Image (tube, rainbow, N blue to C red; front, side):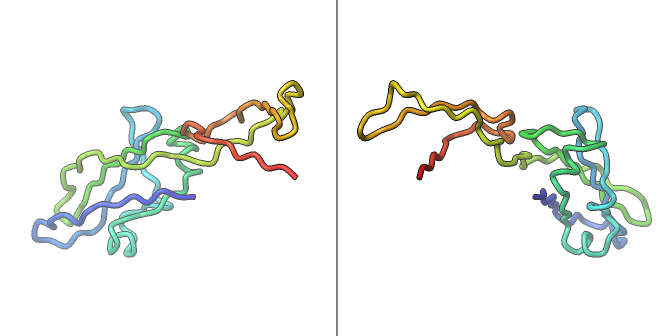
Length: 141
């Protein structure tokens, strides 16, 4: 599971672009960091496609430490032989989500059993994956 970060190619100011500096906000709202392994803006493929793909597990780890359910905020700077562009507007559009943990402690409520139905109760999983759990699917054999 990954997050795709995309941006538009800016004007090069009359000199070929040499790359991009891609900054992702950490859990500290005043701090942005780079991920040069997955989002090295001088990589020819990243330069050509103006996007990079960052695994979600890297975003929830050092140095970003984002929690499941966090918005991802990114800014990009282009550069050429004359220096850096201005920072882009900080963009967001993705939320770090994953599947919720499985419910546990499934118990039949005997007082609700009759010829056509069962009563069941359970506890929510410990983590919701970053979004409210909307529904449960119950299977029986």
